[in-house]
Length: 334
Image 1 (tube, rainbow, N blue to C red):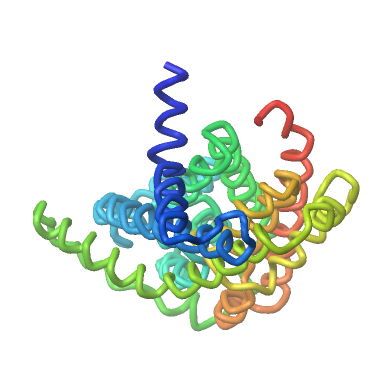
Image 2: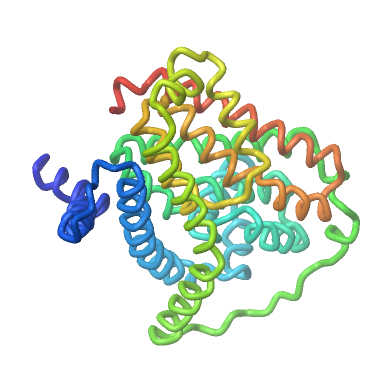
């Protein structure tokens, strides 16, 4: 069984065969793959092709699943639960919705306008970019199943506890009034046929791919530089065990950036190969996907500064704690 899983991990998810194939093709043209420039080219071509294949497959599958959970149905599902249960369901629903924080915010506004508790909608807003199903598969392709599953569990815990805290503090008064008074039109969605769902999944795949592919190219480019040009001792000194503040630094660096899980994966892959600690890498990824500057600007239009600051503080503290927990567990999870 382990041999079967290792094969799936290395040859299906990580596509090691593709890396070997590209290396052989470059060597066949007379290029020396031990050369830094050629090594960077190999890393770039391999990661772009690998992530493109995984990206399109995942978006199609997740969009097909998402077609069963339109906003109207999601609102009805969430309305059946109360307290911690509602936060938990909201966090789980976030795993089958958009891939970045900016595209999650319109759904958050819609749910809040529909009268759902603010704490519940914030649980959704935290989990949606941080722990979507795509992150589970992509993290498995680099770090293995144990790390990916624990990452998702920790992300869901942050979402549930964060939303619950916002609920307990009664932060509804810090939502902009036009959101609370907007209301919603309760229109029943027509039942989709199999063909309708496949068309929807295809359209989502094409649209999302066009939107995120530039960030994939940027991420792979940065990863190629780290992988072939940044000395390992530099990475270890900043994000390795020698720096106890590596998790904090990685989180703070990630906050102002804008990308999604697909853009951060190649950077994470390169950092990991250079000796960066797992917790520092995952904290960076969480910060980028959850607290990007553009998404915070968008969220400010819907909530007042005090609630926005609380949201950022909850996510930042949660991400840092998760980073240190991963560092402590790295020997077990490796």
